[in-house]
Image: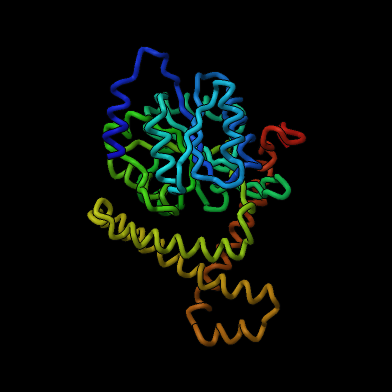
Length: 345
């Protein structure tokens, strides 16, 4: 239904000038951060854009922040009467968008200056349907970039690269925030899966690839992903692994995915890897609390933990080495607009 409505809306566009790009922000309880996100979008030079914010029934004043910007005529606010989740909100924003391209931005994140025009130019050259970049991972408490997603995941590409489904799975690229050619979504009736509140981006991108989307990756970080602002890291990690495991299981049996044997095999490998991480997280927390005896008991009770630990240690060493060798990349991160020293670190 959402795809049909999107197509109808697109076919009834008036003679009003169509913006090159629509920035869509699905926002829930991010009032302290939303102004920075909006400012980073409005500050993108070199193109004509619109910003659409969907407030997902926030309780902290998120809508009021967006409403202040709406009065300037540069931002449009849509409000969900009840909380519907990120997939519903993104579908609603895309339906209301008028741009030829759609760019996704979370309400607590921000763009580097010039990000959108850089990606749009590369998309034009590459004839891409989707194009994305690397993401800085920024600590909320310090606003310091501690790594990038591609550094941590071992993404090897040093130049613009066209990815396939196996690349998406192998390098866990579900968190990328692409620019999307809106006509591709309409032509293929592609929408976010409503009701999936974690892993919806991964599922969306995987289905796009299986539909033949050309997804290009520019391995330069220009998107800033804030982390550490949603509760304790321990709680986050336990919940994260549980959600990834469930999302992967759902993908394996998904009707559009299950007919691709190589993709299913890759997803099964991903599932095994996530299960190992979940097992190790329990041990890590015991070590941090100094529970040496409990650690020994856990290892004796579950010998698989020893194997998982031996596999994980070299991975962690390689990740730390990549962070060290590419530490100069982190100096290119920007603080969000409106903070002190808003220029490059």
